[in-house]
Length: 263
Length: 226
Image (cartoon, each protein chain N blue to C red):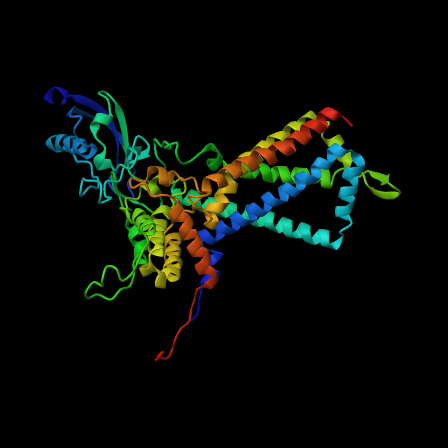
């Protein structure tokens, strides 16, 4: 293996000191890169070099490094997570690159994703969309019998496909309109498919869409670039289901203010 | 306080997109009718003029239909421009130094929508000026005096530039609808794995048939002569 431990890469990485600071692409050269390293480990190696030289290391988001947390957001050569099918940045391995390659690394860009530093962006907008209704209200206590609510297998599977979203924001980053419709659609669709999601479906959809729009995410124009870049392979069929839910909710839902008790 | 979900519909992203989708599909429907009428050109001046005269004889009803059509067109145009401006803002002023599409999402058809749309706007204005409000000739068919719109049309297409521009605009229409048609179904939520591939195919078929149909008649008129 050690004989292979010898890739040299030329990196162009976006450096930006803070949200308001001017950023620029800075050239770096990383030597002794093993093809078995992940992309993040390669940046770790670079950061160790920078720290030894007394320079500021590159800030980037990362956490689980096994493709399930959704933290490692970055554009690699113009594609979110490097553009490999169903792959997050932490699962991109250096064997996918050749010795001497030049790799451009930039942060996810959208108005709703302000840059915090270097490759780190603030994706709190996605959390705000979920807070607006991406959950069900349930009494806590003992879990009920698993067979009390019957859900056909294909429906359960489809809801699970939507629930696979890790909230990485690649859909927003790759969308020409900076829209979070795939992210939001996945959650609306997941809950709309399941009986547990039904009671709050209309209100959920209306509230989430309102918050999504107010945060400066764009409007979907059905390019499907999100679906193509999503590391969890989430389909825009879930956006269609959200659109249906929204249409239905907008024409049927209205909330009465009960000034007196209902009992 | 009563929360009016319906009120939000007209200011929300999905609500306005659905209005663009529905007006777009309505315009697609209009084009089919328009193209069917245009094919009467092949049957000679009388057939075409009688058809046009019958439409004109609708009087108040025609004005109502035209007003609805114009409203649909302006709503489609206005909302699409507004949504597009919001999208430009949402994607941010600072863009990627390197951005590559995966090839499985964005297409030339989908990313050129605002441009093909603007070509069609200019086209529709010129089209109305040159034909509907173009040179007025009179003719008599079976003793009934009527406008000779056939002559106006055939004269207009004698110009090589006019014909070429018409064909270019129809290519723009084909590109616009090849994304717009199926996209409208997706926006309305009418997407199901069982039939969405067919919706897409229908959209491409529509684009080629309608864009090609109009362009064919323009070239035919040009080659036929007055």
